Image (cartoon, rainbow, N blue to C red; front, side, top):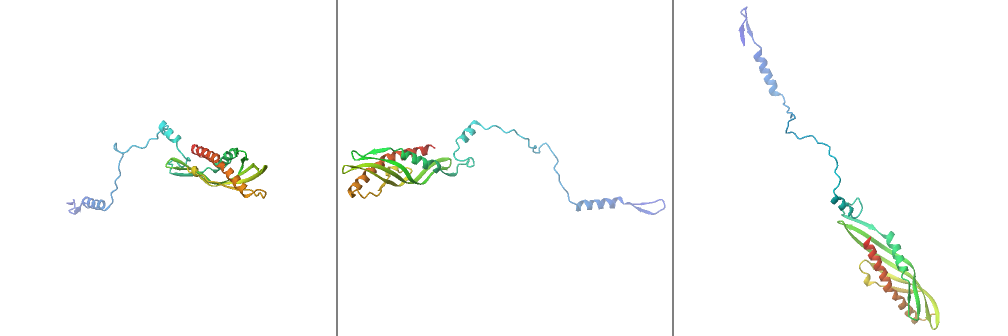
Length: 214
């Protein structure tokens, strides 16, 4: 804007040019948007007091199978040999003696071999048990052979015992060396010792049930 001064000079106003410069500067600058706090903004989190577990949740956890780390119960396998092997030996030694009519008697003296595994497996929070063992039982007895009493010993070998398959139990008999006994007498004594099959099976069935209940 121009105007005449008192001396006749032309005076140019700088207000117009200044305004133009400010507009150009504003146009070339960045604009930042900051949201102000409003009533619609999400409230700040407030600390909450932990609630006690419901009775149903506590009951569910009390029936959780397996270890504490395996809460999902997906898969867990645990050996029970520390309990199973001593228990098998204890049960089989408790079979007691068997009488073979007038021929004599025999008994299980010891379990000299018990090799295998007993396991409990947790799958999808369901428990399953299994076992497989190979056994050898030391036996001793007294037989009347040709009017004379003979003290004899031997072993009953059980090639395999497995969970759910005890009805098919098989055993083999080995006598200690006895040169003064005929071959036929040895066969009859071995047949006598095979009568241990039923009481041994009953003890193993007891073991199987105890394993299920663990």
